[in-house]
Length: 267
Image 1 (cartoon, helix red, strand yellow):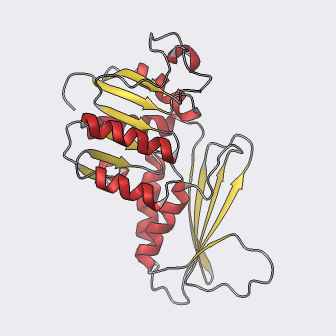
Image 2 (cartoon, helix red, strand yellow; image 1 turned 180 degrees about the vertical axis):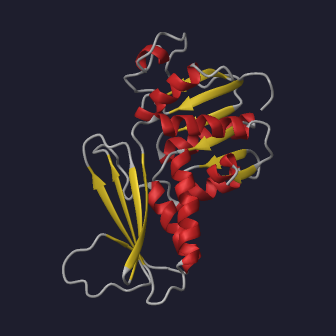
Image 3 (tube, rainbow, N blue to C red; image 1 turned 180 degrees about the horizontal axis):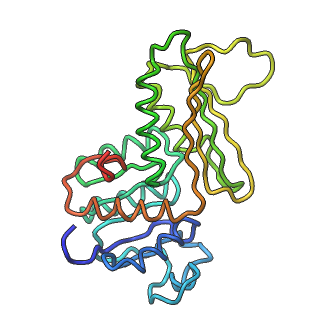
């Protein structure tokens, strides 16, 4: 990024992550917040973005109106909201960090097409720790592909009661990484009843929803007589917000392409 401030839009500004993005973005000397966007019928409309997020006023009203000029967008909204933001970025040739989960194949195809014209960072999880964890999981899966007796893989994720998609986008991404390395094509979500012996060629997913848990992911590689467990947990949302802002800075000035947090972090 050049020396001038990054003109940044937060799309999904009234959500839990949106509020932390506003707080961290307002305090970042390299960032100028130029948009805090929500749906037209949101109760947050008209509020100062700073006071709504629990800090001092910053003179930026929350609302649905897109600014005339911006460099990058961070999207923590909904699948349909994400596509709407993507269209605005295409019109302005601006980069976008997509941290929204629950995306369907049709959404992903539109994102891939857009990445031929603008820089896009598709990030199911913007946490630095989670993305390092993904790298470790990739290495572990590669190493355990052909262990004697086979390795059973289970993914357990835990989030707050308000999360609408299940399993989490991060859990899905972890499963994709493991499946690619180990050649597994069967994905099972939970178990109930007489399901029989567990086959080796499957990945099991288990979603837990409790209280205000920010997010935890555990990957278990179980072998005969031993196991490897890789766990990443967040204690607050700043890990997601700071990672997303780093990704937005990374995209500024980059060529059109579909990037990941691994690119942002040099992994």
